[in-house]
Picture 1 (cartoon, rainbow, N blue to C red):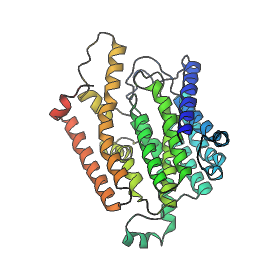
Picture 2 (picture 1 turned 135 degrees about the vertical axis):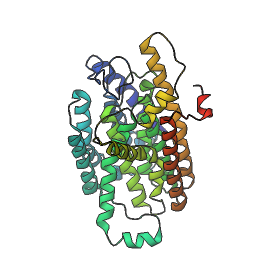
Picture 3 (picture 1 turned 60 degrees about the horizontal axis):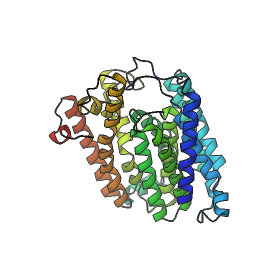
Picture 4 (picture 1 turned 90 degrees about the horizontal axis):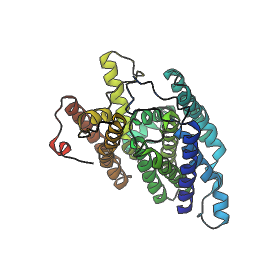
Length: 370
């Protein structure tokens, strides 16, 4: 696994640098007045191409690694990269098109991720077969179409959840990296080396991308990168729970509760305000952290000022994420405990959000320096 991780990291590192050099003169970035813009200048948004290259090429090179005795016993037939590639194609292609043109409507992006979700069900047989509670599982088994619908919804929605939190250097990338490592850990615990290889390759490819993304923000993941993270993590999570009933379905939900809850809460507050959930705004939690907590940068150079404030935002959220990843890894078999932590996170998120909106910032955060 180490050789696979090293290869994915190096390939992603090189591919992302190449993408940056090729597209830095044709970045097609956000408009200067876009609400989600928190950087100065134009930066390429096609980091997803480097991520895909690092992940896919490393897994494709697995036979060579095994021939050289650099990789362990992994069944390459179960990896089935062509099938995974076909599943990824609609959403990822749509993400690249949006990154290059900024003209692909939200409804078309949703349709493309839905297409990938349906392909994941058709090609990989994805379904949520149990909910982790015996009394509920007995009822759930009577309606298998509910499990299929929930799986398709997860694969369709998670790419957009990652796209929502992809607002500051190092934020979405670090979430993806930590979640992939947690999935790889549990996959190894249940003896599923194939899923572990998928997750480790994605984590390492994300690490190669982060070299250029954090802290300097030389390239962004863009919609394509967010969709790649969301699709692969959703499918790996669902397959892990489906193949190994000992793994609670609440384990991946707790791992991903930050982007999932951010999305649900965003939909709620936009509907409450009477605007479309697809309309971009600057009222997500990470954007409030940027405005309320990240202070003390007073340089005259506007670009440097904004870059430093951008870089200081993600570490606040990294600590928030640790509060969900640690219990998820510790209690991955216990649905009741995992559900309790999901509820605790949701409550904590709302309290933190309301506090930031009302300028009631906890003193411990006011004194934090990065």
